[in-house]
Image (cartoon, rainbow, N blue to C red; front, top):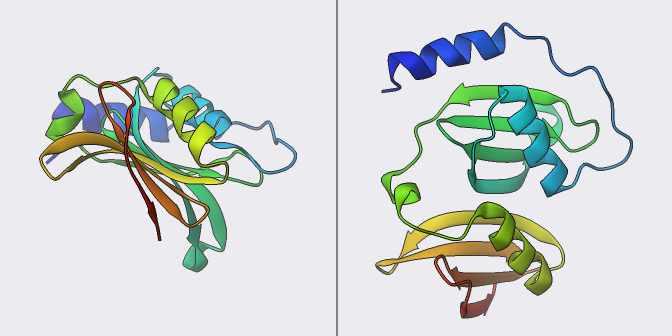
Length: 151
């Protein structure tokens, strides 16, 4: 259950208007993270970012999880289309490479990045990278490539 502070912050954020600036073309992951942080008015560190198709809403979004929130950023115009409180998992408090560093490594390995998530797998903290039919595990502390798999 979210804390009272998180719920109050969520209420304050929901009361704000959506950013009015429309961006042309498809919004990239780095830009989506910045838009989510700006929308929340907090420089929270992401622990998951995933490209998703939302057929019911007729959207394609970057689903960004950061701090205690989940934010959807429309890939076509950069609008925040969804926000909810979502507590960060405990493993996100363990030491790990910052999201931006993990993202740079991920993009060098998987050019068509669809997902980057800090996860516990097989007892080890990793950055899981998915895209272009591949899944790559990076050691979350060092960035060392642990595994490359075809999906």
